[in-house]
Image 1 (cartoon, rainbow, N blue to C red):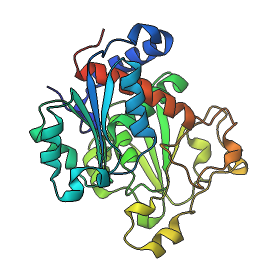
Image 2: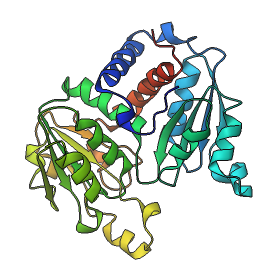
Image 3: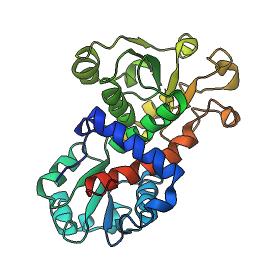
Length: 305
């Protein structure tokens, strides 16, 4: 039995196979509509979610399976004091696979230790979000046709941005990747990401506070929201929340084939006027996430063609 708690739980070869299957689903959706018949996904979301939760549910339903679960901690027995481990142990008797989001880093590890079915980490605090990374990778592959030899800029909340941490980890296994980290001092990429992943894998990188100075160099721009729910001090959040806003005038200096990504939800960091720009790929990420989650569910259940 395999759990997906971190993107590195998948090898480069396994990611390549998931991408191949996802692209086949896009072309031949009808062939997959009964693959998970009589299988159940439990969606355990202890933290609010729109895209990730509904994407998992849509993925399982389109594979012919069914979905059980809850969308907030308040509607589960954790509101009565039940531990994550006990909740997961119980649910693993009811479902064939579990997708779990939790505000505490490491919660999926505790869940995997007791679960009798595969656990998929659907986001744990500011730590990891491997299935968003799968959506990101499929989008990059479909837009660029490769993962090697690209310059990727990450902008905004790099400290708490679990999607950033997961994608940096995934890209570290490819060659010719250059990273640019764009953030205020308070939201810089964590030291452990730089030392344990970036520097350990000899990835060239740059840290800067200004988006405009590096935008012309980028092949990928990964924008992120400053996450108010991760701050202990509301004044700091208000001061930093609008520190980077991508507008059409700034984008004029960017490459014509730039790929703009964002894990969503968006607040003010990308102007709505950019949505119709062909370089805007963040809504494509949403759709691609469903296909990659379909492929991942099949892999973990041993149902890949």
